[in-house]
Image (cartoon, rainbow, N blue to C red; front, top):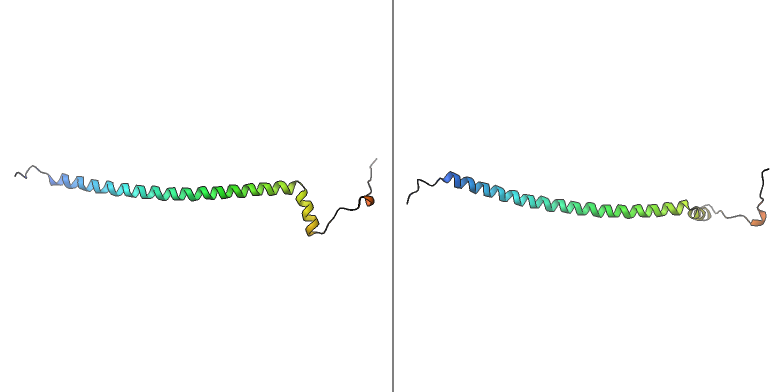
Length: 93
């Protein structure tokens, strides 16, 4: 058998390249999985923030409509509308 023609350096080089590319591929998939998990967390946080924003908009619209202000005045400040017979309307000439 003739072993003079076989260059073991090239075989070793390609073996090392195969191992390095395999480790790179595994690392790439691991990073991809971690990034996808982070993406899902961010999406769920975004959905929570959107729901909170909708609730805040609803509360704001209730507050600006005046109905909420009237309820707060009645409950917390014990305010009520005066008797309609006691209301005097003043006209400016």
